[in-house]
Every structure is written in structure tokens, then in C-alpha cells.
Length: 384
Image (cartoon, rainbow, N blue to C red):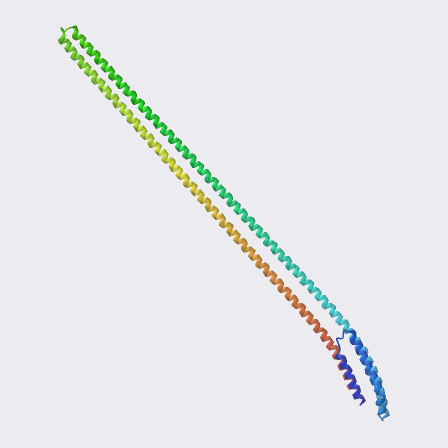
């Protein structure tokens, strides 16, 4: 009966200890000590009744000895439990400090990774801004180059137009000089023709004067005598023949001079026609040269426009490549940021796992301690 009571009380005490708060709390140790004192007081209070109710003296002595041994065993178990509890509290504190240190290190690592991510993102944004500024500078330089080429093309076109105007003025001046020369030659031909006509008139007057003198001489000879009329008539005939011969020679000379004048006039007209043809040829050559220069200017302008278009296309291609590079860097930055966020999430998950593992270790230690306390007490009671 007494043994059964001792086993029941001891099992109840161990179960009360096992159902308490975590062993790291100082309040649990105080409650366990108070409970043990209450159990001992209860045992001491019911022990005399049990001894008095039992008729066998040897059994009473055995129960008294067993009670003393039980008290010693309980004290020993109390000391072992307090030592184990102190060791467990120290181990829990150590684990808590290690967990806090690991948590602080993990938080510092997360902060460092976040700072590195922010620094990488800032560097990426600075690089993107720098590339954008470089692209804008290249585009501005390209626009300035296009403007310069356009100004050069306009200057070349203006110079070409000025050259065409100068050549046109030179052609007009040459044409005016040629027309003036033609007019001068026409005036010279008219003057030569007038001089030739004056010479013909003078020769005609001279012939008429000679003929009048001859007629006067004939009249004089007729008045001088008709004695030598036959001889005179013969002489008159001779003179008439001579006069006719002289008149024929004069007419031939006049015809020759007229032919020479007509030949000179024809030569002058041919020369005028030749000069006109030469002037027209020079004018045509000048017009051809002007057309050629205009075509060359248009070709140069077309080449300049093609060069401007090519430079514009190159600038657009460079700008497109720069925009693609900026997009690629932005995607790389987003990928790095995503990787950094995944790394932070993994670190956070590891931190949660470490916390859960720490809590599990603490629970396992508590379970081991309780299992260590309860089975020893139960086995001891049943052994007795």
C-alpha cells in the first residue's frame, strides 16, 4: 500500500514537472521546488497514519527507512534536476545568442546585399544616363555635321549659281562685243561701199569731162576748118574710137571696181556670217558649258543630298544601336535586381529555416531533459 502510494505521488510529481513551462524560465524551477516540498509534506503527514494503521512493526521500520531513503533520493534528484536545468538554461542561452548572432549576421548580409543591389542599380542608372548623354551628344554632333554639310552644299550651290551668272554675264558681254564687232564691220563695209560708189561717180564725172572736152575739141576742129574735114572726120572717128575705147576701158574698169566692191561686200558678208556663226557657236558652247556646269552642280547637290541621307541613316542606325544597348543594359539591370531579390528571398528563407531549426533544437533539448527526468524517477520508484 505504501509503495503504491509512493509510486503514485512520485509519478504525479514528475507529470506536473513535465507539463510545466519551458525549462529556461526561472519560475518553473521555483514551482517545481514548491511542488516537491508539498509532496514531501504530504508524505510526512500521512506517514504516521500509515505507520499506526499497520500492525507489523518490522514493516513500519521498513517504511520509515524507505521514506528516509526516498527523501535522500528526492534531494539527489532535485540537485541533479537543478544542475541539468542550469545546464539546459546555459545551453538555451548559448543557442539563443548563437541564433541572434546568426540572425544579426544574416540581417547584415541582407543589408549588404541590398546596398550592393542599390549600388549596382545606381551604377546601372548612371551608365544608362551616360549612354543617353553620349547618344544625345552623338546625335547633336551628327545634326551639326548635317547642318554643316547642308551649309556647305548651299554655299557650293550659291558659288555654282554665281559662277553660272558670271559665265552668263561673260557670254552676254562676249555676245555684245561680237554684235558690236559685227556692227563695226557692217559700218566699215558700208563705208567701203560708199567710197567705192564715190570713186565710180568720180570716174564717171571724169569720163564725162573728158567726153565734153573731146566734144569741145571736135567743135573747135569743125570751126577751124572744113578743109581738112575728111582728115578731121577721120581724126574725129579715131578720137571717137579712142573715146569709145577709153569709155569701154572706163566702163570695164567701173565694172571691175563694181565686181571688186561686190566681191569685197560678199567677202564682208561672208565674214559677217562667219563671225555670226562663230558667235552662235561660242554662244552654243557657252550655253553647253552652262548646262554642263548646271548638271555638275545638280550632280554635286545630289551627291551631297545622298551623303546627308547616308549620314542621317548612319546617325539613326547609331541611335537605334544605342537605344538597343540601353534596353539591354536595363534588362541586365532588371535581371541582376531580380537575382538579388531572389538571393534576398533565399537568405530570408534560410533565416526562417534557421529560426525553425533553432526552435526545434530547443524543443528537442526540453523533450530530452523531460524524458531524462521522468523515466529515471518512474524506474526508481518501480525498482523499489
